[in-house]
Image: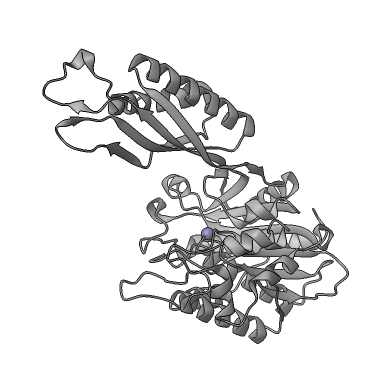
Length: 414
Ligand SMILES: [Zn+2]
């Protein structure tokens, strides 16, 4: 099968044009969902879709769809990502996947390539979480409820309803963005890795076979606050000593109960009362653990609990934990993983089969359709910062893998 190529100059020009939208004085990108930057980015997407002669459609969740050969009959092959950003973001997270999706549709259209299914390039609303995250893909997957929409607000207390009303949209219409799973044949997302593996190994393509699930706990160890000078070491109930013992066991717990893909992080610690001359009576801390296998996650949760209760006994502390969130891991579709693999071999591009440690719209879309993801390297693993960078050669390889994968799927080869 003949290999297709994207138009590198056009793709690079698009990346740079979108990167100039919402850019702050600090060079960071500010396109938080439904902010001025995001609105400008949306206008840019619509203009590009129209220039390419693609049909444009905006659904109730304000997801933007550029469509080719849309016929309301056959299921579409969807490629997409997001153009909204975190504050002071880099220029590639999400944006690259949207620009590449547009480029793929343009290439297939202008070369008059025959496809058996309509194609859609989607820019999803609020992936990054100003209002909770993955709003647009959740809407399409039918995972929103009126309650979720009403309760969604940003850190400044601006509600989703007001933010959407500001630009003439009714947030409740997001409920109507739900797609019949039959109307989508497959979903593909190209994204920067946002981690160091591909860059470290000098490999241009990641073929994502699973997206990690996670659990987040809020843990409290309670002892007794007391005088740091008068209380002998063997008569203390020092909550921080318990935390420190637990932290030093994290690696052992992962080694014994996890997989090579397991990670765990204590990212927030609060010591009370928090004075240099007082024994810590209480520590509250977060635990974030991730893996791509639900059973491994379960084993890890049990092992963490066991370790915490043993430590609490040893240091005479009380221990309590609250589950803040649990997200199940998802697997990519085996057929799509295989198609990406075949495309890489045919293009003679080395690839790494790997997991995604970060969450993406793909994780949501995988609930309603066959889904897969292509990663390109992040320089030094940096993301969500102006340090975000991917070499244009890697971007071109990734876009070519995406184009050929999309074309094979749309040609009915899945
Ligand atoms: Zn992203």
